[in-house]
Image (cartoon, helix red, strand yellow):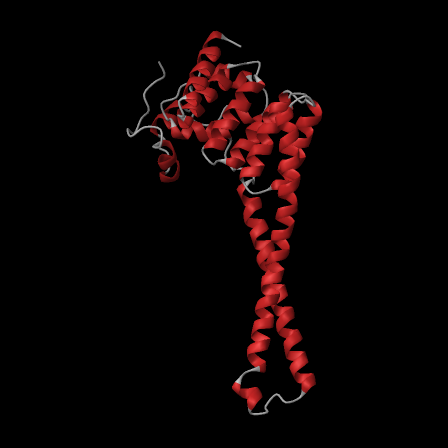
Length: 266
């Protein structure tokens, strides 16, 4: 790791310790783009910062990058597990916890995470059945109301077979509605961990338009995550200088500082 990359990493560690997670993103991104060896700890630390900011999908991307660079390092899997757990996907979290525990069986904390993760998976399964149960209960309630309705009192539904058929139909519809609500809930959870459209490096650069990293340092790292993009120093420098972050990203960036442009790192 170069001296500049090490300085950026230490700055990021300081921002993490101070709870300045958005600023930490900038420092770690600078270190990643400057570090030609692509240190896996940088991705792990940035994943932690993304997790603290509630950006779980981006945290998973960085955790996976750390795992790819260091497959036998347990903390990369732990970062992945934490992001999945907080995004409401306990099954995926448990899988990552277990891998981390197998890599480092002496870590009692990882072992406890596996036990707690298994418990949470069972709870999630029960919550899934609860959706169907609630729908079934609604169907039964409607059927009961029908039995006691004025129409029944007048004899319009005097046939027992008709009553049973109506009750079964309502219960079935209620159960199907509950199952549909369960699948919708699962889809919403999965969308939280879906891979983002922009890379993490590009996302951070949108928050800090004044961040400058030499093109040679950015292209030295292998992989599409750190490939040169339009707006890099050189032919696209003019585009980069005039680019402005969208309102969505600006709101995210402004958590770190009230001004429109962040101060440079000391």
